[in-house]
Image (cartoon, rainbow, N blue to C red):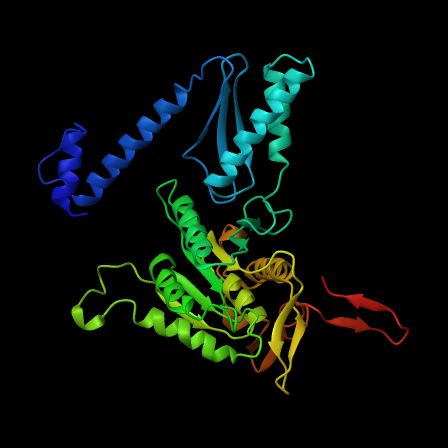
Length: 373
């Protein structure tokens, strides 16, 4: 939106324009007006008798959905959900309505204590498996990276999920980067690969193309089909590159484990990584050296949790010495060792010798088995 359009919006809202006001100040003036209107609306949340109303607060962040519930007889209560997306907020409101009605059926009149009980129950809930499932490091109040595991079986589901996440990330007016890990299945829906590439180019900041059940089809051929669509999304010779906010980076990592761990470890502060995969399958279908399709061990949730934990440890141990340990930036030149005065110094003991420690099993000479994480 150009400056003239912003001035027109400010005039319609009667915000009192000043002469030659910069564009960024016009944007701040409009955002402040919207936030004020939102606050006044939240304060005037007055449902009719027998009805519960809810509203998502603008103070919601990626890992904390803040809802305001109100009833005519019980008052208000604020709920902090560890979920993501408008759909989870709608589901929480529906669950609260059902819970309130169950209290009525049991002969308990609605009260502020009833709302507090519902609030405590909702705040202990978790994301549904495979549906914008939010993953963070356990025991961390302010994680540096958020991973979202989502199971999509069609192009339409991928588009809906990306738009829902993108809309949610812009809720507070400070959008964060969106990284996506995605792979197309082999021998299925080959016509959707080009459309999928177009969607990734338009909605994502960073893309990691990887394998996902390639079966007997060569994995690199599948990746090339999607990559070609991303390359050709905008005709460069027409000078339209600046008109669409296309993805900034595209990484080709055929190994699915490597792709997930690389995407999470390279994510920016407060970045969101969406992994399109399975929340319950433990195997991937791929061909072996003889061309026979086999089932290989691969659990997306387990890999994500490992990557989040190791990324946190690496950033804490190898980052620049800032005042806040959570703001340290990972220095890849010092992972997991560095050369100081012709002497290699090991900084920490990381699980395994490579990215493939997910299913490593260590056995001692006494027959004791230790399975890592």
